[in-house]
Length: 476
Ligand code: NAD
Image 1 (cartoon, rainbow, N blue to C red):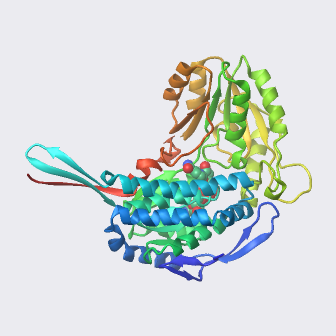
Image 2 (image 1 turned 180 degrees about the vertical axis):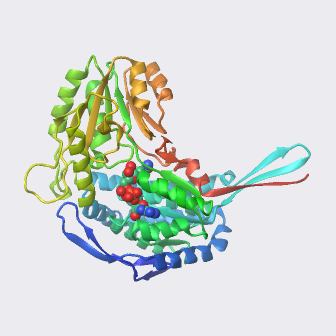
Image 3 (image 1 turned 30 degrees about the vertical axis):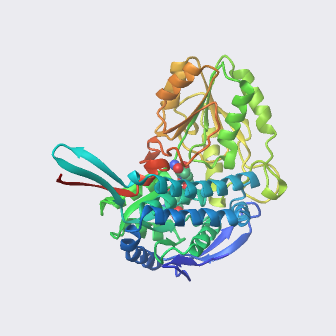
């Protein structure tokens, strides 16, 4: 496994800070890295700039071949990548496997999209008396900044469309989860891309991430992470009028109506918040339940939550730890602070898993909220913490759901098709599920309303976010 930086087709020693990668299950150091420095990032940007002209002129079919090769390489290394996801993030096997499959699917999807649809790059337009053409051209060098909650997956949502568009890239993975990311770099190294087309520089956000954002040779920054850093990136990128896409936080609602299939609703609520230990930007962390069924629903939900097994992937646990000590402490502090305020009552959990075991394990938690302005109801916690309120009418449910600065995802659980359609149209969210788990397909779009996002990833939207549009007008 590579522990170096990948720049200009070579593995090079980092010249930045020393960093310990810690297993969140055992709290042991699993790898000591020398991260990239601002000077290393400078080299990577130079390499990507140097490779851009030639790569940007390649045909979509040519690029599609490389994307397919990457998908194949990930498939061939699936076992290793699952293992690294489990070790570095403590994810259960099933979740780690879903991550790797998502990476394969994303590269395959973009390979197929650009191979089959050349119009995603060029279109003829009829302008009276003239010949019009609209071409989509790669935007330039793209800086891709990923968080730690879905390493490789978030990266592939950016990397696959960027390469498909003809951009060259510098990837800045999270310093907390570089293992699988660098294994992905190693797979990409073997597919024979020209040097400089893809570069990976793990490093500290405020040093190498920041360098990527401020550098004038970088035309686009695609960032997934916290709102605070995202807003800062937007400000910093203004200096060079850089194109920016942001995927930030969320506090997504799940609405359960009295006509829902209750067993199905309970499973959807549980999956929506406890998958990946709640470390999901689109986690449905706000449950809104019809007051007519609330008492029974919460009792049955509590019984279900109590039997979720929390532990190491090797124990076959259903829910793993939080990713790092820092994040664990942040979640503990948010919940403690929130529960000390009036208007919130913990029904289940509310803190670290009891006992003396090692690891950053937070107990699955259910909290009743009595005031919709409560910080536990409004602020993202990014852990396995479900807050709930009741509603008296469909209109009230929609109003409570939309009363948020975020708007990433939402879920509707109802037995009435008309209601499902009506409510989903009225929710201010970029991704709405109806009686369905939150399966994110690269064929759809990803991103949200309000402070959750700027722009959209995945699907054709993801491709166009790495393209400039040029119109050419000429006589017939
Ligand atoms: P973070 O913002 O701390 O870090 C994200 C990435 O940005 C990391 O690679 C980090 O090193 C880098 N970074 C930090 N400071 C930087 C700076 N000044 N300049 C440039 N880069 C910098 O977020 P995190 O803690 O890694 O992830 C958790 C957050 O991400 C949560 O708030 C969550 O909601 C959000 N998230 C959103 C989505 C989405 O699709 N909307 C997906 C996953 C995570």
